[in-house]
Length: 273
Image (cartoon, one colour):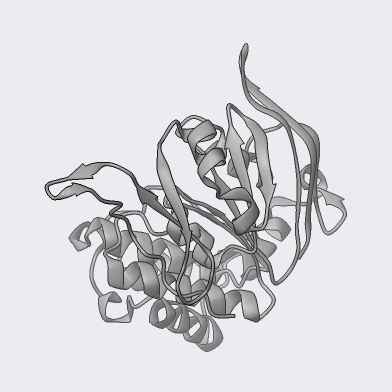
């Protein structure tokens, strides 16, 4: 599924949040949306699903988003929000089964095919062992993975993820990125909103770097994530070096340590495509 966004504007009352955003997203591509807090990243996602009415063009497969019936759009586009609100009292399996709702007719119940799809979604997000646990028994990281399983159960053609690695430990961060890579290889279009620049550069084909609601820089990771750009947009002094295996940019801080100036930082996982 392809997405076209052109000259997008949005404001909360008199306060502009998005200013002239333009980009495309193609099937089999990972697009990263990065930027400081308050730069409009989460608002952009809500506009893409039609939850917020923006000025400009948003087209999914050449169809304006507001002309696509909500049920039809839910079959094609899945959103995993930051800090998802999952219904307490439900088991993890019951939550994921909600992802099958757009595919069921009124009063229909889930059949063997739906259960198989949900079990696969739980397995792909390492939450199968939590299937009979209630939501209120789950940690923040487990809920985050469960929200991704819910989205996968929709069998979407495009996936919008707002901080998908938030609350996750390193093991599950890397596992989530591996799951995303697999989805993209099967033809899914993925848009990621992330704060971790190193995780973003390890998985994204193309990056939008937002600042004050506008696209300040866009292009492949190596062209966008540079010391000058990070300094300008984030106001942070960093070093950007190539990953020793993949060559993708790795961002290191320049703060002083106990043994003098040293550049600690997270070395991003190798990008394998």
